[in-house]
Amino acid sequence: MRMVDLIAKKRDGGELTTEEINFIIEGYTKDEIPDYQASALAMAIYFRDMTERERADLTMAIVNSGDTIDLSAIEGVKVDKHSTGGVGDTTTLVLAPLVAALDIPVAKMSGRGLGHTGGTIDKLEAIAGFHVEIGKEEFVELVNRHKIAVIGQSGNLTPADKKLYALRDVTATVNSIPLIASSIMSKKIAAGSDAIVLDVKTGAGAFMKTAEDAKELAHAMVRIGNNVGRKTMAVISDMSQPLGYAIGNALEVKEAIDTLKGNGPKDLEELCLALGRQMVFLANKAASLEEAEEKLREVIRSGKALEKFKEFITNQGGDPSVVDHPEKLPQAAYQIEVPAKTGGVVAEIVADEIGTAAMWLGAGRATKESGIDLAVGLMLNKKVGDPVKAGESLVTIHANREDVKDVVENIYASIRIADHAEAPVLVHDIVTE
View (cartoon, one colour):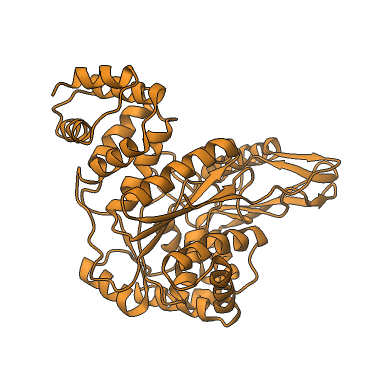
């Protein structure tokens, strides 16, 4: 088998066999296939696409390029959730205890953030003492006993994906549905879940800018999951404006606590219920999505979800009193209001630009080596569709520096006020096949 022949086959619209795909991924992972040939293949896939069978085979070849996590010692159906990214996306902090409160095992492997704010682990570390450095045996025991634990990503998971992603990033082949879908799904499958719920974002703050592209990606990932024996569903959700009001690590933890108490932002609660009901349904804990949602609402009403969050914090060394006393979370030295220059209705909040402003404060990382300030960030005081008077605060900046002119300018450039606007639809579609 020669790589040049396989490049030509795909270039001419041919279908690669399972053996050929395994040969390519194994050879590239072992540095037996050079970058320039892998680049040529990626470009051929970009233009010629892949069949559903090719996509599933590519995903599993990437999974098998490194270690896989065996969660078989954890009782019950393990359901994982993945978001394609966004601004102010606090769903994991809410969903993990919410779903675990219904006796569904949530064995979460999370990474640190690169971009607007920290990842799930960074956010949880805003809670004093909380740590994710736990061994595999303790991780399994915590999930079996308490139904919830979060551990840092470790081991040699999907090395082929790391190499391919770096290559795609510099060869203009990132925006290829089969390459995106196999990249995301390989990581989720290698992490050992039985079922996967996907939150595919669309809009200004998302990777997929249009609902049509998001839908195509969602269908591709759901079909890959189902084709390789993982029950998979997806929600297509709006990211034209940030989710919720908080953008920043400690700020998002407080917002998650409010949501578990039943007083969180309506959009965050709606999305958590939309994703959570799929998780409950796939875990065989409800006969329908409607029944699943009612069960989730009940554990919020009864306080069980909040108690599960406290238990989770305690089990991983954190101070559970932050749930009742969120003022114990890291606090920024300055709170600076950004007043509206004119009155009207908020017509647009450009999510990725607002996220960038939070990163400038130190809430996120520009590079993997960057430090992160858990206290800083932005609190939106208005969302799209809200009326606003001149002089009324649009955003509260939480900063550890007094001069935030650059951030203020960015916020003004990112928020548009008009005579009329309506709030965007949050959940665009549900994908089950």
